[in-house]
Length: 344
Image (cartoon, rainbow, N blue to C red; front, side, top):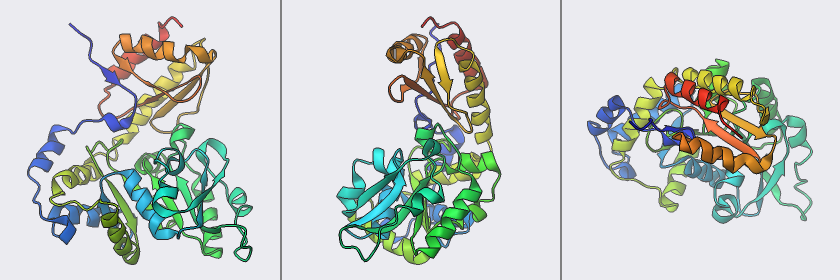
């Protein structure tokens, strides 16, 4: 009998649960470009109310919500401040330049997280024509390239106050925001009040098959809806997929702590292995290990694949595992045992 495959490459590989599929198959639908899809409208209302924001917009992906937000906030020739490892810069196909004609100021920071002091020194003088106009600050929480690191909320509030003083909008790439909030226990409304716009992904740890929501003021979302149309993101009877996201927000948030516990078990195991140099401290559902011998990275991935365990490379000498709702505690125990017996 073949072993069950355990896929730890990403939390994007999740499959809809039976209950989620039932909600999707029975969802009432309409034409969302006309704002007439009742399920999309319900999802948008629910997400906006959850975070205390005025409005929300359902989109096909987190990349789309991020790129729409950037396009609304900046003008061609402007500049976006973000961490050098941020998703909006590294993994969105050059969209900031291509879609919005803006440049990027890349900053360093601890595990993908910025501090207000580093932002402050890179605000361009608006009276100096040699420099682009600083028009947006973007944070990422949790920080993917930082191994799922969670922002210090007090630092976010300091950044928010700085942005207000300098009349700069503050955007959040919240692809795994619910993981951060489950970890910290911060009220979603209090957290969201620090941002002008938030991109929230539904298809990662929350387990929906597709989709993200963009949150902001009514005026911001009105403009965002137009940009979504220009980007080709207008969807018709989208309630079928919106229902999966709505179900996820209602039923899959609290269980994220299970994924965090599973990730911590993998962290504990990896820290015991002689061929592992370092494991980024685990805060949520992402586990990143740095190997003693960088040339062994692909060897480790291949060895695990032979055991029907799928993980991914995350840079030179680095491997990543991401826990999610399709991983049982028995799955994680098996991965742990395989790792302990792996010959590297």
